[in-house]
Length: 356
Ligand SMILES: Cc1cc2nc3c(=O)[nH]c(=O)nc-3n(C[C@H](O)[C@H](O)[C@H](O)COP(=O)(O)O)c2cc1C
Image (cartoon, rainbow, N blue to C red; front, side):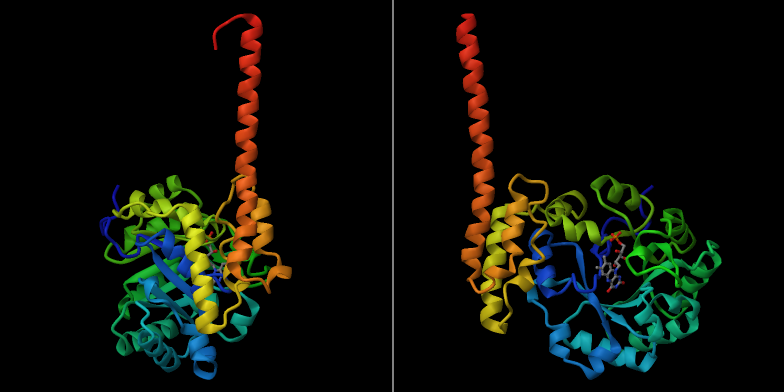
């Protein structure tokens, strides 16, 4: 079954908003690897935007588009004001966080607990839609606490749809508001993909994007048969090279034109530019590339160099050269071992008097 909204949804593949992870540097890396998937900012609270340093939270690079700003908040007029600020900074979508279970978020009365207040969220969505010309979307869970009933999420989506929300990103787990840390809340409540598929069947005109536990091409393909899009978080972050296949496999685009080495070089150039333009120290950027050579020989030592804070006074190209030396040494070692094995085979063949 093909997703009823076809294969061209702008939400077909998305990289999840992740606090402290998907900052502008991380998104720059992801955009080198996939031109067509949709990127999300970390959650920015309305309080941080209204009273904090707007530029620090919202600065982004032109290459990042399409990119969404995720807001955390619940007061409709504040949300509308912040959505307007986000649009002014060039974000292509405003997304409201109704899925974060953390204690701090709950005290601020937003995040996952908002699923219990659909009318308040609907008012917020409506206020944002009135304020901006870009899509306003919502990211949420499939339920709250141990209640595995379908009614809560169905009515939540229905209420927001009536307020004008057309795109729902659904983390296919309940949020347990008591007794679990945010990390545990991304692992322990069971994944129930069927609930997300059911939302798509019940609301065929809405764009439904599935999120949670997706870590391979086969899983993406399987979910895309039921929903309009898939959002991926941790696996994308930890294995960024995986993203380089997405455009060609799922998004009708050309394959990534860069090799891993070229991506690393592009990130080096970016580190130098950011240091000059903004005084950003390279470790703040390098921490996002640590998974780039995931699974390769020499990757552990390569990673150790890039994450060695004792090197932070060195220029990044020097650090890059030290790191790359480990990959090259590992590749050299593999070649030498192969050659040795071949030489041994040839010697045995000669002893046995057979041609080789
Ligand atoms: C470090 C980290 C930070 C996160 N921060 C946010 C956030 O700011 N907003 C949000 O909606 N979800 C946040 N999430 C949840 C992810 O967006 C996503 O819903 C979750 O990780 C499940 O997807 P995955 O299994 O593909 O990682 C965060 C996840 C991680 C690992």
